[in-house]
Image 1 (cartoon, rainbow, N blue to C red):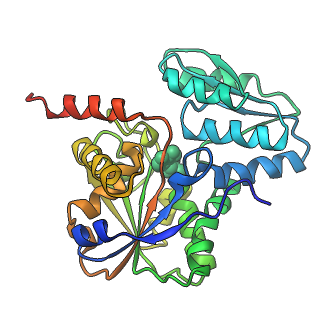
Image 2: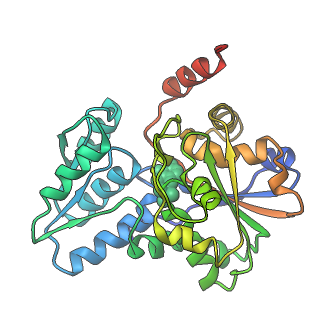
Length: 309
Ligand SMILES: *Cc1c(COP(=O)(O)O)cnc(C)c1O
């Protein structure tokens, strides 16, 4: 039994209407730890346990860390998560609920990550949030489920942070004879590391991250994600924080599901009737989810984004 669940695949009248297409939603928000991350993280943790790991170490105060904590509890393997001082109280609370040891260290993720790497012992496994082939093949199971449901989309829309989800979905499309299906990769202004790399023609780092879509805040996408852009049809689209936040509100009203702005970015393409969807009759939206933003937080961000500058 894998650690993730098979999620519902539903057609959304709301997104279909707004996006002028048949919009199908893969509801990864319903995974027990709140996002698709458990697919890859769960598969990686099971493999590292098989190879003898006695502890899992993560440096993510976000959904990757939550997935590692969940996997560790399910597999009875202790988990240590090093998070920076900026990690939200909510994230720490969720990690502790999964019985993970939480170490708060450093002003930024880089510092927390350095400490995490330094404590990884011989019998520990470090679980990367997006750059590990084991993660990608785990994420690919979401496409296996879509293919088993006999849905053949004309395009797939997903959000890109470090590119792990992108790599996994493309792997899944290819292993299900859907390798011709283009992917629309969505980021927010201020977190658009994939778009930045595509424009430059090679992987490179963003100087700063400034977006409310904190789960998309990788300064540099993994090399494999960049490489896929030369082997698979990928359209890169950047939306504003405002659009991502509005999409979260509308999705909550329409589908009664609260997702992070990282996921709102993907939904915004449909809600705004984006030109990127033109010509696609059946579109699969990966509702990646996210458990780290409360409705109060989303509304506080919205109020701030609405202020005149
Ligand atoms: C991690 C995450 C992403 C981005 O995934 P990557 O594999 O880093 O590209 C998008 N949405 C949510 C909710 C996430 O947790």
